[in-house]
Length: 117
Length: 113
Image (cartoon, rainbow over all chains, first blue to last red):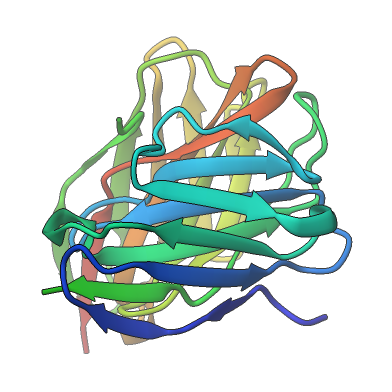
């Protein structure tokens, strides 16, 4: 079974530029997550999709971050314009979970490391 | 915001010793999970314990959960150099029709050969 694919692995940009990250989850996984992990910290949930609908984006800085999940499969996360504090690893994860009563592990991609200069 | 706080932040032990990491959380949960992250890599799931379970084992891993104290512990027995990694607890918090998965601050484990 193929894992969660993310690209690019590394990206360096100047502040105020834009960047986009792509994620292809495991086939058949209903739920997709984007996390931001700043060096030395735990992952922070930015947005959670169930199929192609957003179920949680409470910690997404909506003035500069946007995300979409096309046809309930692939997802992109965009930052425009980037700030210095956006330097982090952006992790995509997917799971089979569909609702409140379901437990199950999250499968993570390798992450996209962003450096903003 | 981080739901879980892990303790200790860093732990260094000799190969063959046991490693214990603790996680405390703030709100009621459905399940609690533990993940491992090698440097520069994504997170890998280790074990899930449901809120109605008190203890669970998987190979060299033992997880306990005390919902009255809102805490969990992960024990790795007979540690190996390959266990060197960061370990995170993650809580499943019911929220409307879905579960929000929130990670703790992590424990960085170093196992010295």
